Image: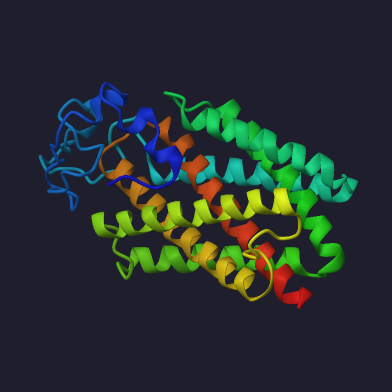
Length: 287
């Protein structure tokens, strides 16, 4: 199962000859609830991490259990790396807010963050320094834009934070309860919707740059509210796809360094959701 998040479709995860030959062919780990999932990119015969581990009593050990093979992705490693990246975002955002940096500086950091994000997305291996630099750049941008919007829409930033937290918690709960089932059909739908959404936003931006105003009006008024909600729903779907990739990586013993990519992907998705909430709240308060 592949995520629509560009981090999880990068060459290191899916290309032939990538990490431990993840794309060589299906061979699910036996003795786990994930056996029989040939679409999982981690369950490959060339992956030395994906072989079942046998405990002292001869039983197959569950992924991530104490005493399992070191050097593989675990939920603790994903949580710790995600805490570092999100912590960097929060600290940088707080600094930009307190220093009251101008909007032009925020746009500059947005472009820097975009460049760093694309660079990491197409790298063969995770680079912690690059990922943390991306987090700092995105944090500075978020601090500037949040402060700017909060000045004429008081409380918008805090409401966007609470909304993002609520979406994360809600999607995690529904994913764990299998209310949300991430399968091939779900993935295709999300990817198609994301492509359509992105193309529409690109056209809207181009029209706005050429003719001025809000382009096609997709980011203001009633249409702006509708597309803001659609953006948040897409972000929630991205989260479900990201959770699936993390779950599969842990179940099939992806290398521990992939935890940085999991943290990177989750951070990108949460930034997306926050920005959509911020935009939506600004539109609602402006009406």
